[in-house]
Image (cartoon, rainbow, N blue to C red; front, side, top):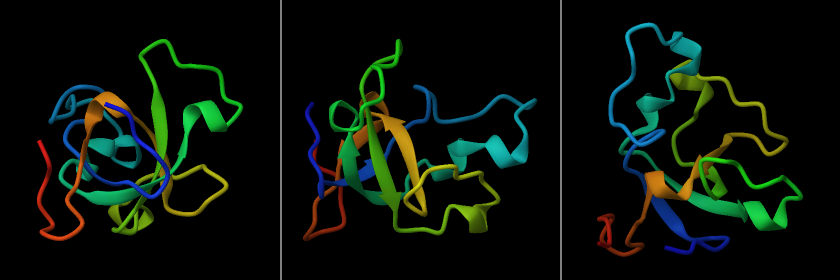
Length: 100
C-alpha cells in the first residue's frame, strides 16, 4: 500500500505486533500508539533518509500527544514518529473507521 502526505492513518501494529515485550522501557513502549490516528506528513523517499532494512516508513503526526503517553519523540516536527507502512492502515476521513 502506498501512502502520501496528508493521508489519515491508524496504527494497527508496531514492528509487526500489537503487544510489547515486558522488558521494554516505558518511554520506548510505542505499542501504546496501536489504535491511534494521525496524518502522514512525509514519506521516507522525500526525507533523504536511507531506506530501512525492515521496509518503507512514513512520518506520522499523531492526533494524540505522544509525550503525554510518556513516549520519546525525537523528530524536528513535534508529535511525529517514523512508522513502517506495514504497521499502518488508511483511516476513513468521514467515518473515523479504517478502510480495508
